[in-house]
Image (cartoon, one colour):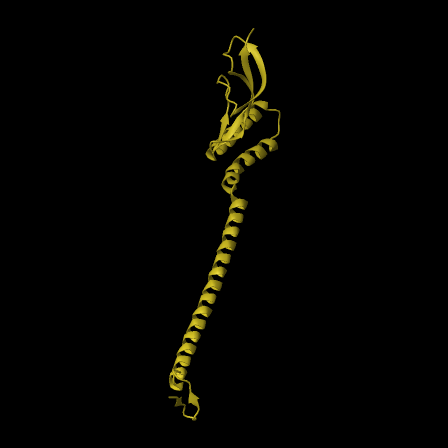
Length: 178
């Protein structure tokens, strides 16, 4: 037995009545519209998050650049009195070399204080055992006055900055006399 639709057209056996098809179609269209809204919201969220990440990256890059540009600001501010002392020393006139020497010594002490306050320490290894990690041997001298492998003389002090070697000390190392 075949049923007919309101227009009198026959419906195949087992086919849903047109009201049910219309209801299903309306339900599917509603679900599709909801899915499209959700997709649009997700796209908007992704775009906002990408923009936020890009803004954070730019801020971080700007902060790093500022840190690089002004990393030594404290050190240089601390060095200003040393520069002032050197300028005053050069401006002084006269033949008083003792006063000039005293001014240079004072300036050296101030410079050393500033350097140490900023993490710089001198390596002055005279009399110590030679350490290839912190010393650079410039020459070896045979001697009985010092133990073999010890530093006899320092040509140039070395320096460490916050425990990292900045420059090795240039030294003369004792070797056993024949």
